[in-house]
Image (cartoon, rainbow, N blue to C red; front, side, top):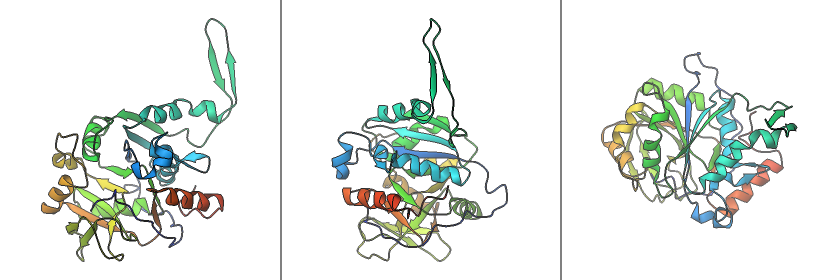
Length: 288
């Protein structure tokens, strides 16, 4: 079920409507986003910046992912930083400076006054250094202290966009009660395949699928705190390998099937495609 061997994706489906759910299903949840990988297949951009900071339009893809979660009511973010993480810190440190008119007092007690409002004022962003060389499981393990030990959380990658109904995925996760629910999407042929039974339980995965009709892990996961029981104290451990295998063996990995649009950004061509969708006003993920 390797998410990181990504497909081209295709234009399919329409922008989903936000689900109408009972308040306890739509409650605000923390969102953990992996932002530390080197993105070597997009070296044209990632040689100079972390992949989550590669722009779609005038804003980095990370901002688009966060805006999408926020549109579903989830505005408390934990970012797992690594490669060139200081650029992500600088982006959020200077968010007001870049968004607002500002008046600066240059006296002995300097101060700044920001004049404008922006739509992200209700966001909370935790910027956590999880190691320059860490793999995905260890990055998640490192931010455990920033999460509520009794509450589930959302978990995704910092380089993919979709029109998934996130609150419907949360409802499915709570219905079955397993440790992790992954969003199962259709690839165009480069990701590891999930074998899913009729009740949604994942019972096996294959590292390199041969059939495009297979489902793969598209990110946008929902996790219970007990997922940390499956994460070894090993910086070289990828979430998509040993932890997933152990979750499968324990019957603790579930799926939410998404038949709509999904697109990773693993190559220059995919970056260009996402930018074209945004520029042309046809971005399926823009629901704000």
